[in-house]
Length: 86
Image (cartoon, rainbow, N blue to C red; front, side, top):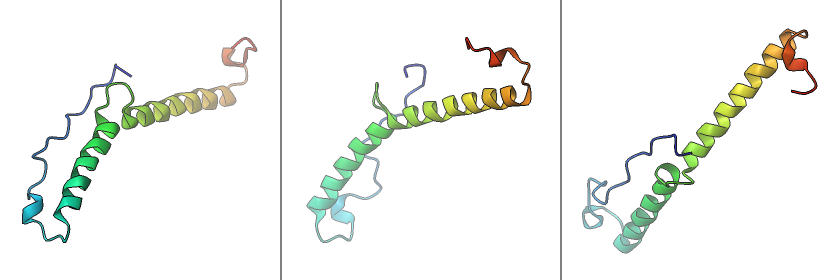
């Protein structure tokens, strides 16, 4: 999937307010959640080899290509795409 450009990584200063400024009971839990969220976002967007959104994008477009060719073949039974070797 190296042909796709990777999204910018999530920076530690990506939140407007620090955990101390937030109205939460457990600031440590909020900080832990934010750290985990950064990891999850990196898995979605910026993992060099296995970014989830890139895989989903690729799967969807391969499906679109296949369905387009299949539809063209169904509408033209005399086309070369019906060759058994294909």
